[in-house]
Length: 145
Image (tube, rainbow, N blue to C red):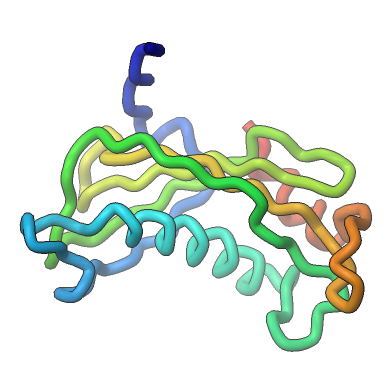
C-alpha cells in the first residue's frame, strides 16, 4: 500500500477561486460530502476558462471533456465554510491538460484536499481529440507550475 501524500500549501498554486459551501453540501456526518469536492474542481476549472474568454459553454466548437479525476482528502470542511480553490497546471500536452487542484478551508494555509483533473480537448460535434486551441493554451500557460 502506498503512503498518503502530504497536503500542499497555498503558495504552490497559481490561481484561486473562492466558493461558498451550501447547507446541502453537508452529509449526515456534518461535513462536505466527498462527491461535492469534485464539483468544486469542475466549477473552478471551467469558471477560470469562462472568465478568461477561453470557453463559451454554448458555442465553443472545441471543448475539454473530463477523462480522469482523483482526490486525496486530508481534513474536513463543512457549511458555512468558504472553500478557496487553488489551481495549477501540472501537464500541458498537445490535446490534454492535467490540473492539480487544492481545496483550502476558509483562510487555512494547508489544503483540506488535493485532486487532479484531466481535460482532453475534442471537436464538440465529433468528440474526437484535437489540439488545445491557442486561446485556451494562452490561458493555461501561466498556470503551469
